[in-house]
Amino acid sequence: MVKDAKEEILIGERNFDSIFNYDAGATRSRFLTEIRDNRKIMGIRCPDCNLVYVPPRSVCLKCFGNLSDFVEVGQAGTLTTYSIVYRSEPFYPVEPPFVYGIIQLDGADTGLVHLISGVDPQKVTIGMRVRAVFNEKRIGSIFDIKHFKPIGGER
Image (cartoon, rainbow, N blue to C red):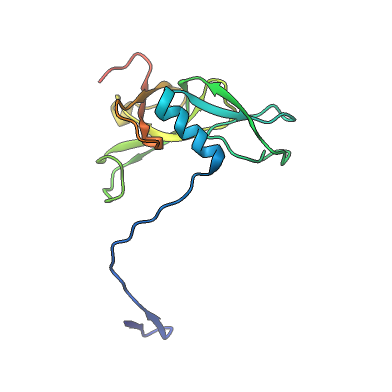
């Protein structure tokens, strides 16, 4: 225990390994299963607002309606914003520098956060068209989509 002299707060430190599991739920499970088994990206459409959410959710953010109408969206889309990551952390899926972006897939009204690769991070631009690149071995994770790369750009 360390005692903070200014505020008399006791600060404890614990180091341990831990494994956490969580249930993606029925809606997100279908999203991940379609990516894993069929290389399809599914959204969910609000029957009242007609908005398509990717990734799918169970309640509409606009009208609070229950959502259950799955629709396939495109594997290509438009990069709406991005951030270049330079600092290394043990939980990052790849080594820096890399780009996280928000991609609005064709047919979707919301954005999906994912890695952008196949392009120099300094050449990434908002409005860039990108497409999904799937891993050959898929396990039911969002990283079954390896990354998105610029359309027409190969690496």
